[in-house]
Image 1 (cartoon, rainbow, N blue to C red):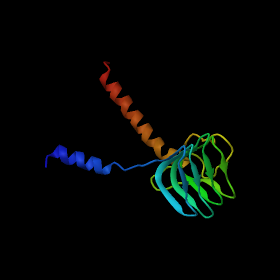
Image 2: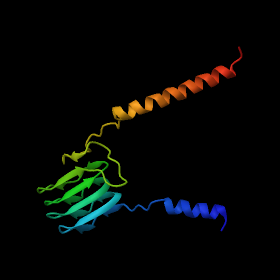
Image 3: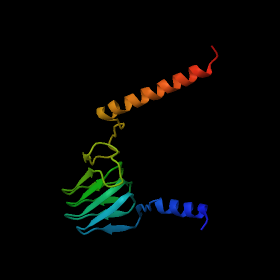
Image 4: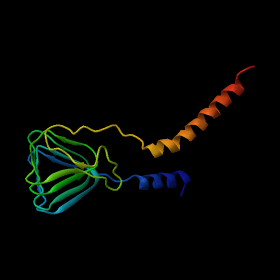
Amino acid sequence: MHTSTLAAALLAAMVSAKADWALPAGAAADLGGGTVSMGCSDLSVSGGTLALGTGGALVAARDVSTSAGSSLALNGGRVELAGQWTSTGPVNAGNGQVLRVASPGCLLAGPAGPIPLGGGAAPVPVPALSPWALALLTPVVLALAGRRRRATAQTQPH
């Protein structure tokens, strides 16, 4: 096997498969109290209907959106997502909840915890580094800046 063929095969194996779930107009899904793991994929309820049921859960989602003409009925279930919540369609909470929770391979895009179910997207703060991360990065940045200054000074005529 040629090196380029082997490299292409390894690269293809490293690319993770991702399958979003879309419920277009006329489509309906009822979890009946069961659990579905999205594997860091997106859910788009675009005119369709999704019902979770008591104890039902849709977990490990990245972004979740509902559009006008769609229906999301939690009915005592929960939606767990790591990314963005955008709701322009009706959401019937029925003692259910939407939570922002980290999941494997899916970074949080906002504060963890319950997401308000009112219309529109919940505001997301700009990600920031912790004070410890900044303290560890500062010497590295200063060292790199010093190297650049020395290199520039050596190349300029005196």
